[in-house]
Image (spheres, rainbow, N blue to C red):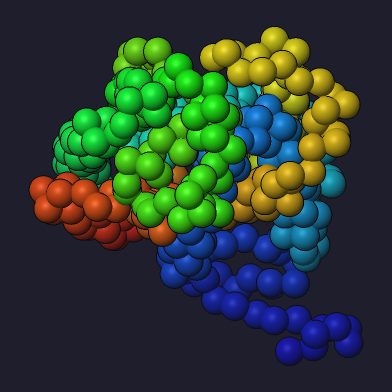
Length: 438
């Protein structure tokens, strides 16, 4: 239909005729929301694997996170100036640029609070991956996020999700966590056995002692030449004997610990688990905070002030995430934690080894979070928490890239299959609980 010579596309939604030309672009269908969640699931499960890869190759986490946080903000800016500016805004749903000058600071503060806790959570997991491992860290943090965050979002969303489906999905996550803990325990026992056998078979003077802590391993040698030889071994390019260290072998585990940036030798189990649980608690709060920012369930906005669009809220969310990450990581350059070496702004700027991978990780995380929020605004943020099944993707990359669970026992493999199967069920159930926001 043409109106004054201008083509206008009409769509019928709940009995009302709506001009799509006058509407800002929003994901409104259940199918579109699920598509956003699935794409977000892949992105959010992939970027941790990239940062883990860089740490295992010896790049300082402070350098990596500074690169990551730049493109993470860039993704939010791209989303705001594309999806947030498509179509003509209305009084009820203004475009991104129009909302920047409105009196919506209560909602802005909720969005920025969400960005702060997400930044803290992401920063903490970067260290937790070294202590606890990629797969188990993601399982624990995701489970905490689902149990706390999904429950909060269910009530904030005025129970638009089907409780009889949603909460059994939460239960599936808890079962998967039990499987995940058992996988970690079984795999640690497998690795301990490998290293014990390796130590017994090693000649005097090569490796004097192998210490085992939280499933991670570090070699101590009194022979300076042997120590230098192990330090020069490259995980990807092979060992000192010109033979590539095979995934899952004792040689592989020892080379990995010597190569990686974050050393865990001598640090107790409690440190790694404390960092992991802290990250999970932070992750459980960012989605409910974003929910409050876009829907104003607590009526903090003045009468007549429109709610923040998902794109505007995500912009403020990412800005606070960026600012905190920059402050903390520049501080960690000069005052590093966990016995990492000191660095500087100059050293960071000149460190191009792996920089493009870190920048890619930031884009994947940024677009992943944006897609999660776009789907959550349409189908309910509780259902959008289905992306917390991201350990499915992270475990895939862990096995493919890092050799996790290679040459493990049959018991470990059975538990691993059980964990992944339960995550598949959990993500399906949470997506099936999707409602429709009125």
